[in-house]
Amino acid sequence: MNMTDTTRDAKTAQDIKELEERRRVAMLAADVATLDKLFAEQMVYTHSNAATDNKAEYLDKLGQRHFDYRELAFLDQDIRLAGDAALVTGRMTGEVVIAGALRKLNGQTTVVWIKQDAGWQLLAFQSTPIPAV
Image (cartoon, rainbow, N blue to C red):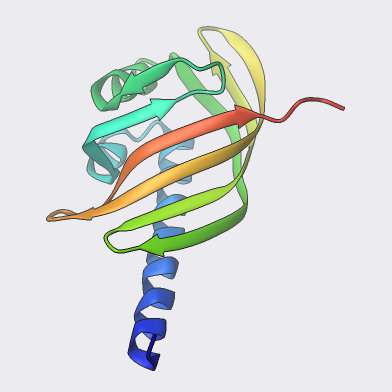
């Protein structure tokens, strides 16, 4: 890898980090318009209970406040680049009200971003709960 590749990779990793922060803020605000732009049409969102939503389902549930995020933090993010894809692993903590019930979030997450004509978009999200000790 030459210096140009290293510089480009560092810039891309920073771009992905900023997109992750935009996603976090949009989830807290139930900002469906922003998330609609950030999510790829083919997106699959796998929740910590193994339920999955496609893009339309997730955005509808968020817009209807089925998911009402109260606190949300993305921690210890590791960003790895592979061509036109970026893999982000880390932790997600917070609180969300789901269908009226408060739930604590504490999971290990895997996020896949892909570069498309519209720019970087989230293709897949997976959360695995971290067991209480």
